[in-house]
Image 1 (spheres, chains in turn green, cyan):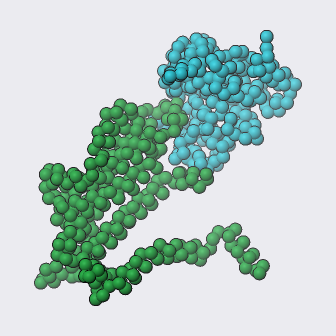
Image 2: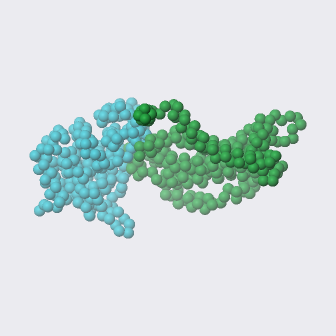
Length: 289
Length: 252
């Protein structure tokens, strides 16, 4: 019995081997897909002739086949269905709108949040207005958005910007307010101007909160793009979702929903990676505590 | 007038129950002098330092530095904070050159100086390290280097070694003695540690709380250069007995 014990001790004292590392990653990966897999199997088994719930929903294999056609099908001259080979376009339109709207929200929200957090005057001037407007849900902005921008791309971008703006500005404000007083004093003592303080002290100190706001804002951005495309624009995942429902293509509806989830997840993952890289100093701090 | 000069300075913190942190304090520090403010916590010694630094405004009296009234913080008064207060997202080198950089000084002017100072404080091998990767003593060395690199007219040190363990504190005191004996900068040093005050200072001002006042000034005539070996000398203990009696209120 001594043999395996010794091996185990030396194994954990040294760096974990590549095999152990891969094994751990694989184990976690299996755990993560167990639940969706179980749902898929149940869903598939409860269907008859490719339909569930009395024909209201298709089974997963039907969804998969519909997606294959939607993503990779080659439309011929006689093709009438819009769901042949147009998946990438739908993704592209939606993602571009999210990118534009979210980018605009960051450009406005971060500087504004820093100023509100830093200056009491700015806080008393702007903060109450933001707090009054915030409870208005993005869906309530739809009529105004259509009235101003019509059925155009910018209507969707406008809605995404509004949705992502609030969490970004509020978290940035919080971060800028919580800056350690002595960091500011140290910078002043070293001859920093107000601008230096904002850029070199308050902004980096607020970055952890800013990233929290970015993640929440991006999530709302995806909600906003779907809502606005369902109503106010004639392209993208949200448009396909509603259009497919009208023509009774629930397989496309479900494939569309999975696509939204996937790309929402991927964009969030990208922000988390960026955060890890930018906030290296903070990661080290947390490990040491 | 000295480099630092306070005349009838009071500091009252407002609010429902106003607290008088400093009550008509007269205080001077001469050019090149090392003065320690010694007293229990809450006696207003840090408040006095913050006023000199320009971090807070006074309620009454006049406060001048180099014969000009103090209105704001500036690089002529290098402050060393108790917890170092380095910017955690900047590495050691970036923290040290932060001052000269925001003052838009010439790189060729401050970079050799920054390298030299980091060498003096024993951190030449740690330019790339982040503050979180350093020990408390090393962080405080960076805090001192960051102040010295600006070539300030005075160093204001607010219990800089108060958060360190006894061993590290001794080595930091030795380092400060060495550096000060070389540079002879004016130093205002706030502490509650009697040994530290005697070892370092030319003059100790003993403060009492509520209201904050300087009750006695004691010149420390121990010969220079000093070292931490002086901590056990008979002369040192004579000063220590005197100050302990003063702080207990046992005089007159």
